[in-house]
Length: 364
Ligand code: SF4
Image 1 (spheres, rainbow, N blue to C red):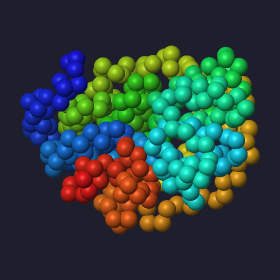
Image 2 (image 1 turned 120 degrees about the vertical axis):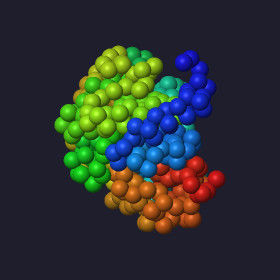
Image 3 (image 1 turned 180 degrees about the vertical axis):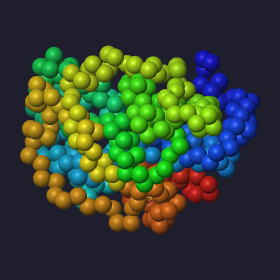
């Protein structure tokens, strides 16, 4: 299979759907951790073609959605410091914080720039040597290596006005926290594809070994998801729990050693706050002491004020998989992609956005 279209071939999809329907006898709830998977599942109507025995629930795998308001408020406070340029990926700018958003303060005159890569942020720093440029390091293990590379490059090039606000999150620790909380009973986990490209499939083994939950790493095309569900159903029916890869073209069991090395060189694990979940030990990344001069938090005095959650928004419950967007009274009424109340409606990988765009009878 070489081209994307081959991962969308309907006859192959039909074959997998028939297999799943035929083999699934035991009721099973599978969580797709990753927001990218949620979007594929909704866009291609995958929930609707699965048998009643298979329930899919969405997890916390949208990095923008899980960024706690306390951290978003820090980013806003940074951008409010006169002379500071804040560089961020697109969706983040629209997320409402406790009292404002990056978009609103930009309209009020703050220098907030949307960038497409860390290299854009580094270039902004090189082009504006008299202004501090802070890149918002938001994302999972997928983005952390490129942010690490930007810090090493800044060091090499002697760029002294480049900083990173490290709000990175690590996925395996938060899955352990969710499973320990026991709010959602799972019989299978669709492990994130992009994250596994970096960390490999080994870090998921504790889920199969310690919790007895089947795990399959999936890609992002509809056939990837169907193949993944088929493999999960296979494990459930055989009473097995192991880690398998349904995304061999992107993931190796050992991951990407070079990217991991970069990440480990610059960052070390630290506690991180997750929206709706709270603080989880070792689920974040902070800059190592050697790179402290690039650490925005260590170099700017920030007083963002106490965090406030958006009234009526249940993003936190949705991110833990205990509620769905349809349970939110604001969904599609006070909260839409044009006028989002919470982050799950802002991000294209957010559950509320996916429900709104592709869900059953809601929105467009
Ligand atoms: S619909 Fe809007 S308000 Fe409701 S949970 Fe989703 S983002 Fe929050």
